[in-house]
Amino acid sequence: MAKVSKNSRTGQRAANAGSGRDYVKVIKSIKNPETGAYSYKEVMIHKDKVNEFIKAK
Image 1 (cartoon, rainbow, N blue to C red):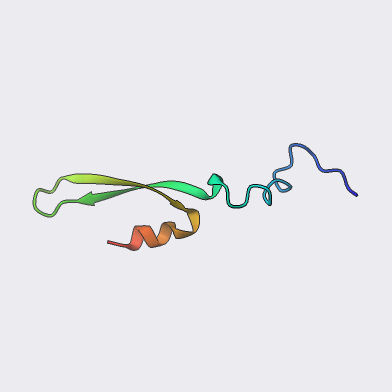
Image 2 (cartoon, rainbow, N blue to C red):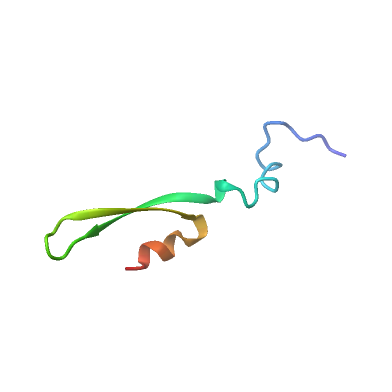
């Protein structure tokens, strides 16, 4: 059996599957049509669903 380096990140990916490392913080600016002011929506979502969140209105 081969020895795996303690600094190897590829060996730890399987162990970290499903952990919090797959989530990212996304901040989206939303403009109010009446006042023109911007508000910001902050969400922690899975990294595979970032494009869906950005495209949604």
